[in-house]
Length: 339
Image (cartoon, rainbow, N blue to C red; front, top):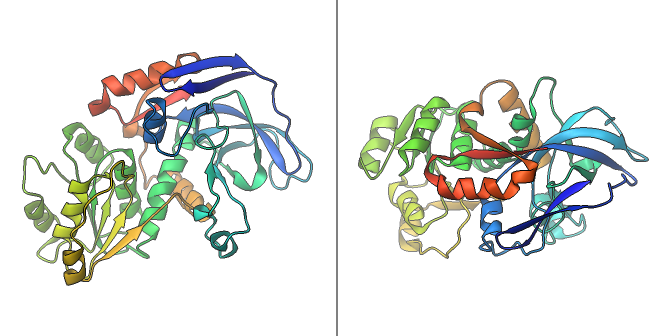
């Protein structure tokens, strides 16, 4: 079978390798679609602190089961599926207490373990999530980033009837905002310096959008939510400036969820955090229930994925996808690799 390997930064080679056989409790997935994530791009350019070459990338993906191994339950050949890319130990304190998504030995398929950039991948049945009838592979590959948003919003508890502000309208920020709206938030606002991303947000049904370079963010928040402002803020950029915005804009007693991945260590006004009794909440990946919620939100139409789908590249042009994203960063949301 064909396999793409990032052997060193900016160098992908294609090789023929033996087709894997599903082991005990495993299924063989024929990979049909891969979503390119920001972490994949960082790794391609050698700028990801936790991904080393050589690596077979691909952690957002969907496909079809072609074979099942011994002792497989509830899955069969022909099922269309997506996969949770978490490899966990099951023995550490977080795993023993149900928080396997923050396992002390966590490895991610496509990041620290062999990923989906190949025609077939054998995976444990417990990681496999069936797609509902009629869900296409593009949407199936995007379940993973929707689940990121579902878990992030879930860190707030119920958002029903609340006013939610999301900072950052890239794919994760967009999906996080849509999830909040889909789970019953009274109003959702999203900010970004990129007008194209705000245009996509509006196409997805996010009601309030603002570019802080063109309009005062605090004024826009008051207009969207009234004088009480946001009930919770989700930071989805991963830079010092937006953390500062979140702390500054937050009403006293507000929760701030840190969703963005930070390349540089930010400075935070802890005195203001203390004075306002703010809660800074971390979020990492997702659990199985977040995947189920993500699929339900997409299936029911409460999360609209189509406006985020930018372009497809055939598997043989894998590096071209990275080059395209680099050249069109300001007008790109989600790029797919087709197999």
